[in-house]
Image (cartoon, rainbow, N blue to C red; front, side, top):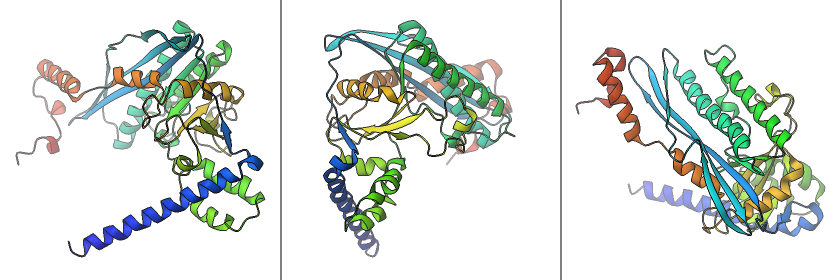
Amino acid sequence: MDNFIPEIRKLAERVSETESKRKRFAGFLRDINPETGIITKLEPDPLDDVKIVGIDGGISKKSLHGFDFMLVRAAGAFFHYRNGGLHNVDYFPSKLPMPKPFIMEALSDLDWAHSAAIERQDMEIMTAIKCIDKFQPDILLLDGSVVPHYSERPAKSSAVYARYSEMLDNYNRLYSKATKTGTILAGVIEDSRGMMFCNMIKSDVLSKVEHSVVTELIHILDKTRDTNMLFWALERGERSLVFPYSSRPEEHPVLKEMPAFMDKIHSFYLKTAEHDRPVRVDVTDKDQIDKLASILLSISGQHSGYGIPVPLIEADNIVKLSDNEMDFVYSQIMGYVGNLPGAMKLRREQRPF
């Protein structure tokens, strides 16, 4: 332990030094903003007759000896603002949505992981489509991106790829419905680990700037995530410039399978709370970004350390699944089938010591 503590101290000093450099270079980015337009200051929206839906989903999974089992639910929280205040709140399908059970047999561990992600996302997207029909919102917010993450895409040879293709079709349905109804569709990413903004600053901004710190700044950006730099660069009520979701959408593993919309998805970062990191926002209509950002600013950041829009917080609250709910469903299954081998828990859950 005597040798271990000095190593921890070295790591802490390294983290502190790197963070100091990021803060200093964020100041440089603000200094050159008049020439580059990296940062835009926004005014909060007055929230006069604005209808917003937040969509989220919850999932609880359990692997058993003979099959895999999961509970999934999704819900929309509808917030109607008038005269700067909250006028009405409603829910779809309800404030206490029942979870839907799924049983998957003989899937590989990878396909099981993909299947769980697909079912949760698809239920969220179908709920979003129904919420547009029911509430006719001005804005519909997804918890997470408006594009499925590439890491959750199964191989075409996978047993669950056909189900994945169905999910992509439903994403396209949602995009089309939002376009037809004039609903602003956006995804709010709570903990983005992206580096697109930093990469764009390197390639499109710093390449045109002559300054002694540019070389060192590029070195820092090479090992910095967007939100880490923008925490220092943005003040509350500011957004970053807008950039494409992918620099090469025709090669992106997900977007290339959605050709009608692959070049329409754009992103930006918005700082909604003084002491929180900026959130990344993905949109399907970049022409509505300033309107969207101003409204997000007005419905977020009520707590200075947590900048997520209130409708998404409420949606998350009503879809969370507890271990007790999974345990109840499992006990019901066992009550029907008895102690069959396929329904046995995995050994790691039954160790006697």
